[in-house]
Length: 191
Image (cartoon, rainbow, N blue to C red; front, side, top):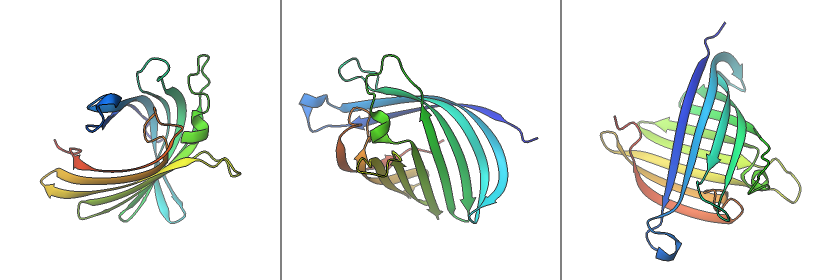
């Protein structure tokens, strides 16, 4: 029997906005995302990729604001991680949990019911494409697409470029179609 691992995760994304003081400078939006994940190593082949992990997790995402700007949702997320050579693919469908006091009942229609993350790594250059979809295939198709590229500058300091289009780059804008481009530095793997 494969060993199971219980992970606790926390992600916080802060969107800086230095140029518009009327919309709260310097942070326009901060999103909080704690989660609890049960991970199981797996070994099987799928479409030429080697599946390495499967998981199920409880995920909460919110912006910590009060009404009318409150945005939050709870999900049960299933994940399958696969790899081949320099490629990694993560598939994540989810089920939104119902909420008796729902401030944003249509969030799933905009942010989606699943996403896929495709990553290519070569000589410390990392290309990533994340796409989400609401799994509606009629006239109500919505989702989000984000491309990012990180490259080494010095040691573990990396430059970072990101472009995105769609719904839900931030929770406050989950129901607004937008395109954004950002540049910066990445401190991931700094220690």
